[in-house]
Length: 418
View (tube, rainbow, N blue to C red):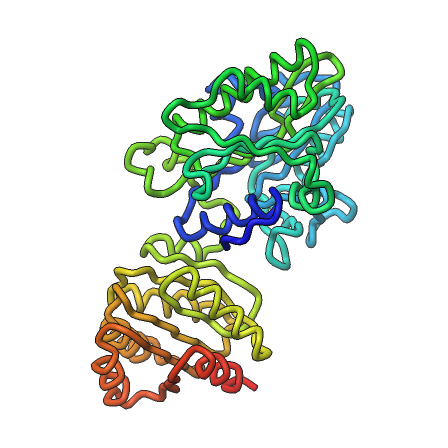
């Protein structure tokens, strides 16, 4: 996760690192509400839960052109497709015809949108956002991120916006600009002007862009954000600057002082297992394999997934139980990972430093007894109180495949379903 190769992987690494802190991720319409509250330039818009609500709101929403956007927590909506809906319709639809815009609302809500960032089968669209479409002359990219390497916030900017920023970073790294911000001093007017210039805004538009950058940074700090991403950050043909698409993330550690923000989380479109795991302070991300992984530590979890792949298997999830796991959390983790019907084996890989291996062993035993686990279970334990943990597993009477090291564990997990 710490590999840095140009700004594209810089952003990708940052997003992965946020997984271990269970960042709150808001829908676009919620992010735009916060932007508007902070004086950032967004188009007029409304949100609808169904076609009838949209029709009512359309009666007072008159513009030259409309953009209808499916509200899911995934990028690439414009190039996405509805797997159980109208063919040829993506998650972003632009039209001058109000009737067609209204029809597209009904064609999106209640259907599953699949993009390059969703699981196979897509995500159910429960809301759409309808906004005024503005005359875009040029698209740029702007993001403010909290990054350890710079020990604080960093602004990442590119004049090549509206596209996959990782692709820009890989093919044209000279178009990626990074500006570290002193968290004690805050962003300066000079830095804002420099970034606006890097984004190739000119004349009066450069001043407007610099003002927007400053407002976005103030929002970033005011809400304890870990990411504010605007893609695209646009210049219009009538000389305005807009934040066209917004993605905001917040670290859960800020929840106690940002209650209003965290109360906005309605879990729409999220994997039910991820939501359930969050309740028990577990880090879970579902994948498309068949070997469930229960591991302590994000780094070890990623290494476990890699070595499963190395031996020809496929991980079903990323699940980090953390360093202060309890027996009940172990049970909940088992319950969550085995709720995936694709799971054919479970691999427990614990390297106990802070974690007491005996706690894991007791949790595994109780989970197996309560759930009547029917798939092969491979357990590798090492570290604190490991001898007692191994004794508990041996005396449990359960069919548990033990392993001496990570390589052995991965091989046994793959072979158990071969």
